[in-house]
Length: 186
Image 1 (tube, rainbow, N blue to C red):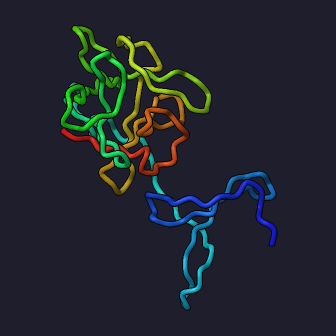
Image 2 (image 1 turned 120 degrees about the vertical axis):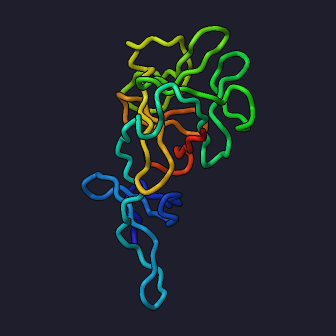
Image 3 (image 1 turned 30 degrees about the vertical axis):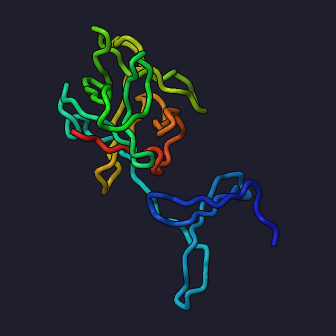
């Protein structure tokens, strides 16, 4: 049997299943999950939806100006600012891990000024998250914190792009696997 074009196996953290990803004859991406039949034979079956990443009401997740940290489920580390004001991942007990969420901006006070997470504006692909002085009119500084339905985990997404922040501090298309899962810690 010939394998379809562009195939690969992937472990889905959210469903805890192996997925067979491929491009079908209509050039669309599809996924089948490894399952078992009643006689315990391995079969490929339709995958159930892994995650629903509907935007949560920001006020339901975080109160305005409430301080919190964002812990990544995959790395176990927290999003932080280092001593140079650069975005980094550190132990959650370290300095620089406390953020505020106000009107869509994720910010911290650094050297006497308020700095915000900043996402380059782009149509797709990957990009590194940075910080800049906060400007409420900057689209790159507006984020959603979306709760993954049925969990207490969140996705951090720039408001105008369908990309999510991952533990390597890059932005990738949203899929909801562990590298994109964050836990708000108060």
